[in-house]
Length: 275
Image: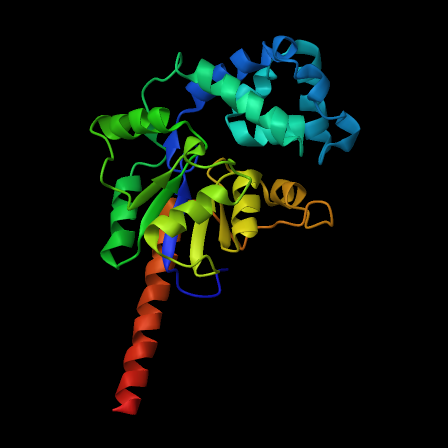
């Protein structure tokens, strides 16, 4: 669990706060169909170097078919960024080209955007009610994110967040720490363990650890504990693990409000004792 009350709470966008799976997977498949033309086929990782057997099977399928396996699409559990990570590993140049091709394809698939949970707006508001800055981080292109932000709930969430950072706002997308550090710079808040970052992917957890803030894994997809242990093995090669795992955004809000209230009680007791 987080060790101290938060100074700010940052959230991932897709598959943490909103559902844009249909458009995302369609754009990923459009990009994968261009692997040969983009010169990226030879940049794919060797399946033998994959983190899990499941990653190796997906990598092999993509290499052979130039598309995602239908079961991956149907399950709606793996993010675009995680897909690019398991396909290209540490090859940042290949990932940058893949993201660029994805962006070009995504504009053809943007459709309605839905809150991943019915009370997301309420929970973000509850965080802000106790004085916590709230931000959203997305690897989306800025104009795509703003279109999605305007469509959520049919009325839009403009003005709901204190800061937003997109993949095109910084020099390196997650799992680099750049988007998180940029958001904190905009807020004027130090990057330390008092900042919580909530995301649904291994990429999110890695980015938070690299930024020196507290990573919280949002298990909205309903992964089993065995699977969570598999994707976060804590090994020398894959050391990054979440500080906590939550099933709902309300769980994050309730914990943050509880820790803020406890901190206030401690401060008041200390002031009373000094008085």
